[in-house]
Image 1 (cartoon, rainbow, N blue to C red):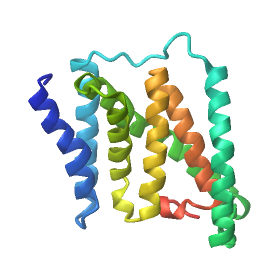
Image 2 (image 1 turned 120 degrees about the vertical axis):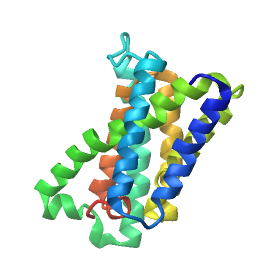
Image 3 (image 1 turned 180 degrees about the vertical axis):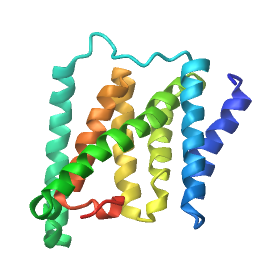
Image 4 (image 1 turned 90 degrees about the vertical axis):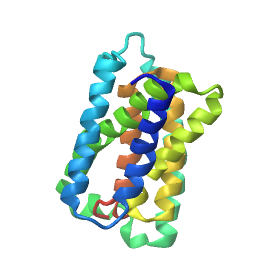
Length: 208
């Protein structure tokens, strides 16, 4: 399971073939079964093959992390608020203002049941398995952003693909620097929760 040939096939199935297949029209139950099977496989490889320990890393610099994340968030807030305001102002903060309980539920569900599994797959697993293969750090990070964007192909929305590609690059850089699934999950959750809050949730499969 550690040979280059095996990892190449593994990468193609998990990060290319499956995301493309999920964009096709077939039974959601089958998609769910395939997704759960793939996730179990990933956890098995992390624990048994890569000997990854799921524990909070020591000496994490939360102060620097939150400072950098806040600076990026300010830019994201400015751009996305203007975007919603000019494209469909009726959506601006709509769910938060009209359905606050639904808004809170979305933020909770998304943060714990969507973000963390995504980061286990697209950062922790991806970095543990494939970083030693690449000679170029930049190529490695760009490919991570591209396959993360491809995972959102099922939404069939060009804007979603662009946003998730940019987000994927930001998350890849954070994980590369911190080696922390927790920190990159926090960053991912912050940006994603803001998109739902500002009124861009509908394109990501949540009410807007």
